[in-house]
Image 1 (cartoon, rainbow, N blue to C red):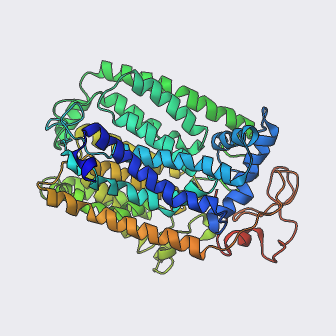
Image 2: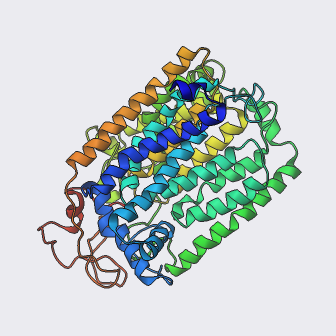
Image 3: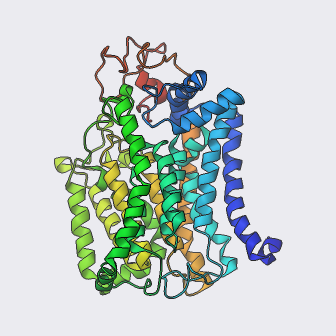
Length: 519
């Protein structure tokens, strides 16, 4: 370690990325190579995503995307299908190839939260981002650990699940928006990244909002530090011509992503999921903002040491914003039912605690206060971050909540990675503590959270039920498990269940014993 500490800054920056990536490989690859198949992640791989990958591999060079066993766009599956066709279709190799998306996600986040070792365009008193000394780099790896050890991220790192490929794309677009400059990299790179992203997870069109916000804000400059709402509003309204030009360029850069989604919408008969999932992913979900805020409220407690100044500012100088945050988050918390139920897509994670608390009027006395707590925390971060960062981070939170409203499923694994990335990025972009000791104490909370995540993830492996692949045929060609919320039938392209599974349990029970399969 002394050699790393005394080496040049470039070597330290490399180690800041290499160490988390190496640790991620160390904990995921042994599970892959052991052939371990227990729990929800293994069940989703064997019975859904792997089936789609092998089907596409068999159909190359002309895979049929009109109907297949995944509710996501087929980008991730197609990449692995090419590997299966060109290299090998061994399961361990395909899992290993899929894990590279997770290593990329961990490495990119480690690079993003690295302390800035010297003043530059991204740092300085005028920007709201102060340079940290080089020796602060190693401890800041702790900010990456909660995401890496999260059950949601770990499962997608071990088994063939497309989630982490999607989160990698989200983080890539996010960092392009957070760049201190606005240039062709933001426009062209953002458009290409957004298009690739929606080809993996169609719901992830929302990062476009961050690019549009960055375009309107323009490059980082003097006056970005500190919070003054009136000054912010005046600044956002100056030079409308330049702002409209930049925003127009980003709008144009996002057109290919929209056209890609329209192509799939037409291919899938006027829906944004393959026909086999039409009856599962329907309707608007008014509970989504409350749940996202509640996850912010619970996980954000471990990052409070970073935002103490923002909380103090809310209470002392910006009481109106505190009241607004409470009122808006309370309204969102009461907007939809917040009881735990499998058949309305509200189960796993935080929902398993909600079930033990009263819910008068189907509004949980646990989830609603957590949503308010999350709203207050977001307001505190908004006050403490630099001007440009605060608006982009707000766009990320609001855009994600809006996107989740279109999803029937409010499983924690669809929200937790976003919240952990948001908190890590925000924590890395606030002013450093006044002393090295204070900086170290800030990292205790994320370290404790990482430990808790590790315990939960290990428990999911130890307690997960063994899974065997069912003899699922391609959509429309035979029987498949009935999904919760769907009515059995024989209409083409629809899941059907012609009888009990060999084990005597339903197709839903075969995967976990109690929980439905997640896609």
